[in-house]
Each structure stands twice: as structure tokens, then as C-alpha cells.
Length: 39
Image (tube, rainbow, N blue to C red):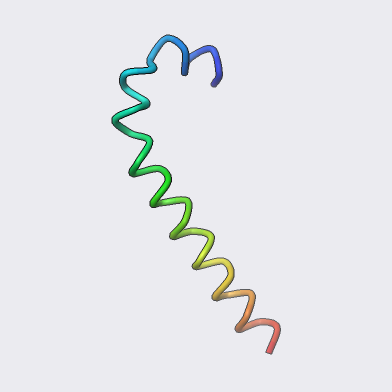
């Protein structure tokens, strides 16, 4: 993935913001599920 990132740096810069939002959303979702199961 790192080798591909160097080749397609322009493409990754466009995709990156969406990926960051998606990862944050996934983290919040997992934390929410963890809180439910901890109860």
C-alpha cells in the first residue's frame, strides 16, 4: 500500500478526507457498541 501511495499520491489526497471521516465514524460506532455490551 505504501508503494501504491507514492505512485498515486494525487488520487489519495482526493480520497483521504472521505477515508478519515469514514474511519472516525467506524470508531464512534465501535465505541457505541462497546458501551452497549459493557452494560
